[in-house]
Image (cartoon, rainbow, N blue to C red; front, side):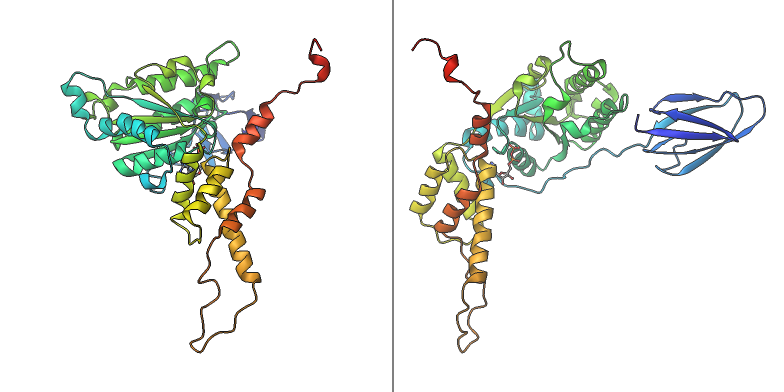
Length: 377
Ligand code: ADP
């Protein structure tokens, strides 16, 4: 009960706790007209022309009904992600090819599917540990297809207000359809669409059902009609670390038609990822140095390798600052910092500070076993 709205009716004070959209406030007064004042908190108001936080005043009598609505939140507008090219993704060739196959054609050539009586794929689910490049792939696909992109994060769309999460989802889908071809990227989709078992509350179940209906494309026929051949050019990319926590209905054809695992990179993939980063920073590493770091970086995911390069860069700067300044030549010499290069030693030093997150998770998951629990000898 954190949100509340106070209604002052003359000297009478009515405290209405937890106002939600669509709520009717019945004013229990006599026949006389009263002046009702209210201050909105959290963007609730009964007058669409008012914005959040403004005081409002109404002349009311006992027949007055005020319906409170929440401020209309604009749907997140895309593209909100910085453009990324496929070259910036290290490794993951097969995975990227699979995503492109599923996402690009329905967005750019939907007529091909219709011609052969096929239903274009509606969604693709990327699953795997954090930091392995799921968002990066979604960003690259979005950049390459020039689609309208809406990015949402499962937990942050969840609202404690009745019906609001569903309304937000509907708004996001209808905005995406209005701007098609569109991609909706839902990170941490397990928060929005968990398994519908007994432990799940009614409101959570309704959110799952809404997302399923929206993905089926039959929530509002009139919005759908705007699409080519009646079907919107819209693809949903979901990302999760816990595919098993997702509601099964979401994983059926017509919703997430394809599931692609984005796993912890092996040595070869780590080398490819390191190369993508090293292309962007001045360095003095030989091919052997890079291969050596990739081999030693067991358990590091892409995000760890990015952190590693960042840390190595910081060390290189630190070393440069601390190094005794060479006396400038007759032409003034090189300005300090201009020949700054990340070395293999910087990367090895960084490896002591940046630990692999995949290993951390594995270590955390290992249950403790005591000698006394081992039977026999
Ligand atoms: P996820 O969505 O799987 O949690 P992200 O895609 O957000 O992970 O990755 C975080 C960062 O890690 C990226 O912005 C990128 O810098 C780096 N990264 C992760 N995987 C790769 C990869 N395969 N190639 C290049 N960079 C990567």
